[in-house]
Every structure is written in structure tokens, then in C-alpha cells.
Length: 455
Ligand code: NAD
Ligand code: UGA
Image (tube, rainbow, N blue to C red):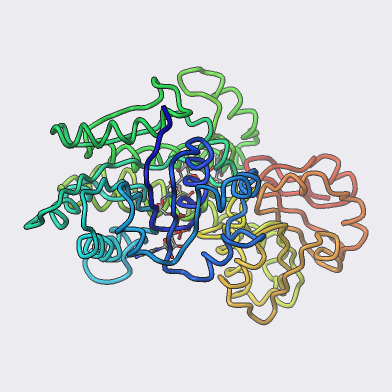
């Protein structure tokens, strides 16, 4: 039987766009509208150049846009006309008042709840897709249902996609998590959402829980993932001090099936819009519930990440005779990871800002993220943005690899070396180059968690 549902999604960002595009593809009889207050974004979604770069996304959007997937700025109309409302707006960290720099800023969330309540004329299922503190769904239900003649059921359905592999993650998720209340109306709403995912996700991968467990599981998942990166990055410093090799250690440790080998790539540090924000969110919840030891435990994941980013850039300065003022330094990659144009909280920002404060002349290169980096840094003096890595590195003293784009592992490092000022330095923040051959070419090579190769 055809699955005919009228769905709207509020928020056309990195989550809203790809998620709804995949639902539209897999549920061709569902009618889906994505709305956003950002007119530019909606214009891009309706154009040939989508605002989000994700492998495979263009193809799917082309297939479903104008058929059963529509992009619009008419938020109220979407609320009025649809029965299921996904909410995928950004949920930034509060930058004022109580919980500043730690708690989630829920003012936008509340605005949406009040807007829905004002406009809706029929019962709605609200699906919390954004990542939110535990009990947000409950608070939203209270705002929506108190004194209302229509019924709103709020479900938690956190998103686990990772940028750069969003389409694959959505098409073949490890799990879909749906949290609901155990009331009759809660179960009914949950079944409606399960029905949508069942169109392509095997039944045993659809996990249902109570709302609080679902909300908390999302924060915990990100904390556990980030914790693995911080653990291996902590060990990378020990490797550099002792002569061990972090790659070999990760391989040996990850071969234990209880530990597993994923997310053990030592790096210049993790970035992205979510790890820091979601861990702080968890830390704040722990403090609120008077669990200071637990808060400190998780907060240290971020402290270690800050340390790792700073350790990398300090090492650059130290290795270049403690001064980079007036020297040209080339940064390969500014996206927070490969295969995305997203630079939010990218380690490249810490590295670039530190080097700018040391008066270095920077050239930043990236295949997809230069525009976003430019607006993040404000296009300052002494920073050039050049996509072609060979042109970018010409006449520079050092190359810093910050993003693990495949292309940076495959460049002709002899040509790069020949065009640089000597001694030429290569700092590999992702361990993707063949360090031995780069050393043989003449570079001084610095890797994460491995002994440096210096002439
Ligand atoms: P984003 O900033 O890319 O997109 C959010 C969009 O919501 C923006 O375009 C913004 O204009 C819009 N918006 C904000 N308030 C609005 C309103 N009142 N009405 C209509 N539109 C509004 O954010 P994102 O990266 O897509 O993240 C969204 C949520 O999903 C966050 O809570 C995030 O933690 C979570 N999440 C993100 C990822 C990811 O990989 N980016 C993965 C899983 C979960
Ligand atoms: C992460 C989670 O993986 C998703 O499941 C989650 O949905 C998402 O956050 C979110 O809530 O926003 P994302 O941040 O897009 O996804 O990308 P990851 O692949 O998790 O990488 C995060 C950062 O860690 C990147 O900077 C990456 O380079 C770094 N990383 C990752 C390492 O340094 N080493 C690793 O081994 C793995």
C-alpha cells in the first residue's frame, strides 16, 4: 500500500536537506516540503548549486525535487498544511546568561513551538530531529498542548548521519532511534514514524525507546565517538615522546573486537558543529543534576581536543625556529573533515588564527570549503584563498595538512618541494602522506604520533 503522508521539515541545513531528500526518494508517495527562514539557502536548494556539499546528494535532489520534495520559505504555510513536522533547526550553544558557552540555546526552539501552536489548525506529530537536551520534547509538548483544543505529539528522532557520508548513512543507517511517550497517542505517533523508515530500513534497526532515553542517547553517542578521538590523540603525544607509532598502536589496540578499529585515527583534533556543542550540552546536564564528577569526565574530552589542536600549531612554530612572522605558510584543507564544505569549529580555524596572530602570511587551499572559510575568517589581510594546491604552496616555507581530502595524499610532493623555500617543512595533521618518500625528497616531515623525520 502506498505510504501517503504530508510532511514538512523546518530547517534546510546539513541535516534537514539530506534527510528529507532521502525520505522523498524512498517514500515517493509522501509529499515533503522543507522550509527555512534563510532565503539564500532556499534559493540555493532550488538551484543547480546546492548549499551543502555531500557525495550523492545532488543526484537524489535532482531526482525528487519538484516531484515530491519542495523547498520554500513559507514556514507558516508548511505548518498549516502538513501533518508531520520534522524540526531540524540549528541548536547552538548559549552565548549569554546562565549556562553561557555550555548549555543549548533553546530560544529558537521555543519560538518554533509557539509559531506552530499559533498556526496549526489540526493535530500534528512533531519530530525532534535536532540534537537537544534531555526533556526538551516534554517541554515542547507542554508549550504546545497547554490549553489547546488540538493535540500535538512530540517524538524524539535524533539524526546520526556524519557529514561527508550523509547519504550513505541515511540510506544504510546503523540504527534509527525513535523516542516516544508510552501513552496510546505516543505509540500511535511512533508507529506512523516507524512506517516511514520501514520503507527502506530493516525492522531490527529501528530502535524505539522512551523520549528521554532517545534524547540522551544522541548526546552520549557523540560523546563516545569524540572520546575515542581524544583518547587516541592523547596517546599520539605519548607516542611522539616515546618513539612508538600511533598508527601501529591503534591497529594493535583496535584489533580487539571489544574495542574495535573505527574512530582511532589520530589527528590535529576533531572539529565540526556538533561534538563540542553536544558534549558541553551533556556536561551542563550533569552539572544541573549535581553530578560534577561526571561533568568533569566528559569535559576533559574537549579539553584534550583543545590541547591537541594547540599542540599541533605550537609544534609548527617551534619547529620553524620559533618565528613564523612574515613567512608564507600553506594550509591544505580547511573543512573540518574530508568530503564536506563545512568549516564549523574546524581545527583549521584554530591553526589559522594562531598563525595569523603570529603574523604569518597564510595561503589556504581546499577543494570545497574555501567560501565558507573566507566568511568564517572575514577575508583578512595576509590570508589568501587558492584552490589549486600547487599554486597555493608555491614559495611557501611550510605545508600544513589539516583536512584528510584524498587529493592531498596523491599530490606530486616533488613538484611541491621544488617550488617551496628551503628548508621546506611538511606538517601532516592527518597522517595521510607517504612520510618516508617526502623525507627522501627533502622535506622535514612532522606527523601526528610518530617520530619526526628531520634533515
Ligand atoms: P544548519 O545550521 O546547517 O541548518 C539549520 C537551519 O535551520 C538553518 O538553515 C537555519 O536558517 C534554519 N532555521 C533556524 N531557525 C529557523 C526557524 N525558526 N524557522 C525556519 N528555519 C530555521 O544546522 P545542521 O547542521 O543541519 O544541524 C541541525 C541540527 O541537527 C542541530 O541540532 C545539530 O546538532 C543536529 N545534527 C547535525 C548533524 C550534522 O552533521 N550537521 C548531524 C546530526 C545532528
Ligand atoms: C558526528 C557523528 O559521527 C555523527 O554520528 C553525528 O550525527 C554528528 O557528529 C552530529 O551529531 O553532528 P560529523 O561531526 O559530521 O559526525 O563527522 P565525524 O566523522 O564524526 O568526524 C568528527 C570529527 O572528528 C572530524 O573533525 C574528524 O576529522 C574527526 N575524527 C574522526 C578524527 O580526528 N579521527 C577519527 O578517527 C575520526
